[in-house]
Image 1 (cartoon, helix red, strand yellow):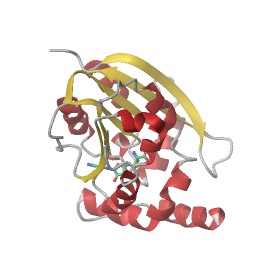
Image 2 (cartoon, helix red, strand yellow):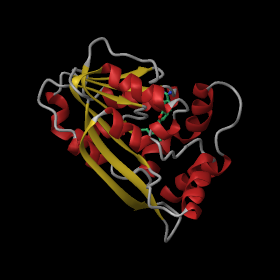
Image 3 (cartoon, protein in one colour):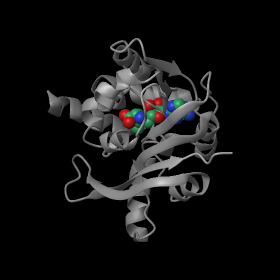
Image 4 (cartoon, helix red, strand yellow):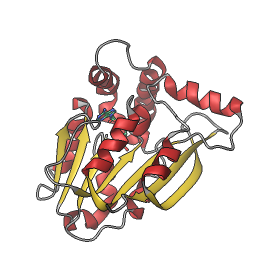
Length: 234
Ligand SMILES: C[S@@+](CC[C@H](N)C(=O)[O-])C[C@H]1O[C@@H](n2cnc3c(N)ncnc32)[C@H](O)[C@@H]1O
């Protein structure tokens, strides 16, 4: 069953998102046929997500927003901490993935909610204690607007978390070109400017550069990074 589901997902990845229409249209066309098996395949592709969630040290009552949260898979990594929070929002632009996120959020109706919105402009009703991106920044064309907006919704001293594919500074141009082309085909844009921008705009608390296996690409290890920073006070 997993092999058949994987084969379907790989076919959609090989085709890539169809051109034309808005960014939201392209996301929906790309993800709708993959939504049912999104989590099982991405659990083996999107590494470090659980580690990021564990590094977000947040007291009870905290308000948290995942930007580009997809199916809401990352909420599960909070475990019993989730119910201690004041509110958790999963914000995404793709209705097919949000449908899954809504089903998930229904397990914790007192705290969790899924919101359909563009994260370059969306603002929660009140400033939040933590905003994080998990493999979403590389899929957002105006990534600076998304990061600026995330900082804008955070209270001073609030946490900004990030886990995503990465172009490390010590990387051969051959390897960098390979991963950029490989992911660009699926609308994922690895940009060496992401991490320096985070380091400029926040006070770093933790920064780790790592590598991980990619399903069905034996012998290759893709670079990714985890980052937690604090919004400067004042
Ligand atoms: C690779 S998925 C990651 C989903 C989830 N964070 C995870 O870790 O499984 C990237 C997500 O970013 C969302 N996305 C891309 N651009 C967006 C935008 N401008 N506003 C909101 N969501 C966006 C996509 O719809 C998709 O759900």
